Image 1 (cartoon, each protein chain N blue to C red):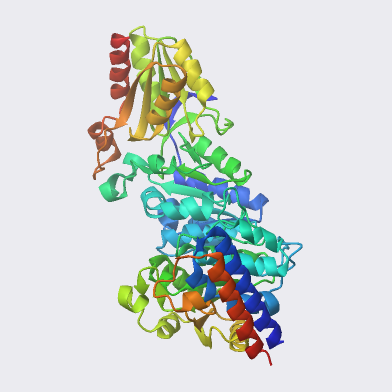
Image 2 (cartoon, rainbow over the protein chains, first blue to last red):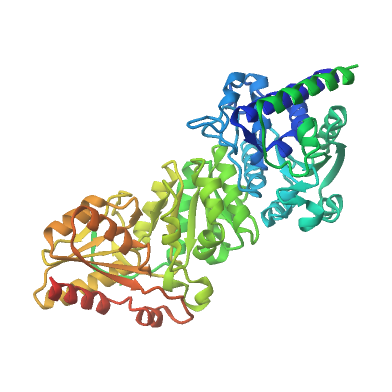
Length: 275
Length: 318
């Protein structure tokens, strides 16, 4: 089972890198840091039917850090929401795959995001709406650690606790970096765990690049039946060799050559990881 | 459609609004109310009493409240979101734009205390710019009802029409213009008085002032057309063209900044399709201030006399 998730994570990384290389650029750092959690969600957690993306009782994914759309598109293509070839149209004129997630353009995108801080409120609305209609569904909201600087996030967190929105699970991609540099240097977040705890959340922490750990913590979060947050310790650019060594990897120019090297490296690492 | 006699309403506008919302919610279980600590100000408390599980008070969080409403609507719920007009627009604009409109969701935004009706809350709470802000949101429908009959009918329309709406409202008792059974078509203005000299196009509380100005002008033998442009966006271009063709000049009257409100919307149609002399009665790019509604209407030149003077000036210039 874990091999399947590891393989999915590698495939999602490769597809996302190929998509960004076809565009010639992209938000590589934040896309790479969420590939493992996307693999866990789409392989093992979500109740979804790629052939029926509007299924009433589906689980929802809201990528509040919408600039990491290429990773989510890669996950959707990997699961068969649309043809993998379509990934090569990323950011091209008239594409269905814009840099930031758009529910009206992309099959499988539940809500449009891109203005940081808004996805969490949207996700809570979807969770609450499903709940009051008696629909058994979970909404997974993926936030960036830099994004947590937005005040709206904490409005939503407080709201979620007060209204006991237990069918929305917050996932924080704690990759320690934001556009302008390290979060610690731009505007430090203090103790993330304590912040969520103080709002009354159940908090779980996982190695964000260990699919087994992520899977187990997401299951625990679901089992609490309380508002919960899963904080993933991640590395911006993880798994993509050229991004891993780049100081500024939020957004990079990516050539086909760079992509090919990174993909070969992903394959090599995967072989070592598979048990 | 028009009443024989214009009289101050027996109930507050907010009461009429909530009655209408409850009436629609009785028929449609998907309708919910979302408030941001404004149940009393906006008059939605009875909704919460009638439907304890269908009202969500977010607390003081307009940005989240709008985004939350948008998320609700993505699941098929029909949220009516309530906030003071200034905060529903100025404070939560990006949320209205991206969380609601950009993704074609279904949120009905009710912004309270339009213009000078904010009265005692003063300049910080006095929206003279809300329509201007919201006119820039593609596909957003903007409504300002003149009285409680129109308010109720607009609620019914919004409840039964997919899309994002901004309705600027007024919590107070207002002069009744329309009969109880009057019905309105969103996007189609009401021609209240036919005329051939000058056309007065008004919205909200200024419709009554326009009717008073009509009487003043009539006494001097001036034939004025009066139009209630209750839908500011999409504006009824047909009736603007009709007014321009029939009359020598046009006067707009709004409880809002003349920049990017009703006057600007009418000016856009006139200048592009039927150039006609226009005078705009409204707030002349100023901030609001504290005072009674009556004082503020004088202070910002929002009275029937101001409309009358603008009409006379037009006719002198043509």
